[in-house]
Image (cartoon, rainbow, N blue to C red; front, top):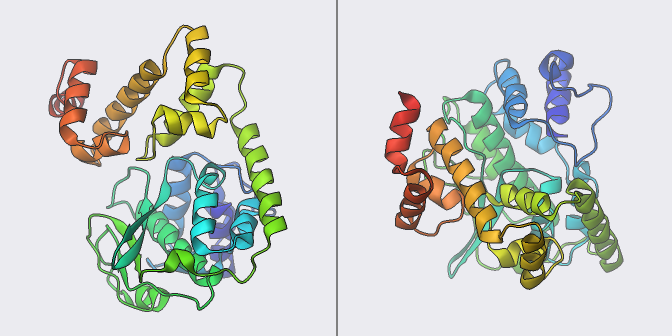
Length: 329
């Protein structure tokens, strides 16, 4: 859906939409279903092509055009919730319908509510990657402002990439000047954001769209093998989400005990599958070299770097640093 909107906005500015979408399998005449995704490399490619034609604020322009309704049932679910907090929690449960491999997170502090964009690994020097990050942060800020009564604005905006030559468009987008080159992508709001009511609240529609999201998610991950289903859930969790057996079992509508029993019937265990997926993703992230070893540990579910280093040594016989050096040799 997002690449289609990128091409549409670029087309309204005089660009050739088909040239932007060439090779992605997407049409310029009709939007794809909201739950249809293209490969992440192609996603960044579309952004890279568009940014080559316009400046960095093009991504913010696309975000301003993108509406919650463009996400279809996923967006309508958010619009039907009672509060911002409920909208965030309910849509987070079905985030795979919107994006796979990246996510929004929320942190509540005594003096602030923070919304974090936890992205795919990527190169901050890549214009396409930076543009995609700008879009997703601005898209969330727009969604909060459009959903909540009073149209709340952030008290601070922090972006990981360096500042472009002209930042006026960013100030216009957020109502303040963001800070660049920060460790995380963050939108900071005053306390109480989660309690703000949503004007379009409708409990019947909320329950209906919750059911529709659940059905779509079930169709998205339908497989006969419980091992395949668990592996899919773990792959989605390898971006800093909860990869515990309790979380995975809940996402599959099972108890932890039932999940363990069904995995045993297929001659494996949850811990074995988790270790295998973690090891695979750790190697991928380390080979790319775009995030530090400590960040890799966080992304695949380790709370502390030493625990990750110890596990990686057990998996491979090497430290993360030794593995990276060997991959670059």
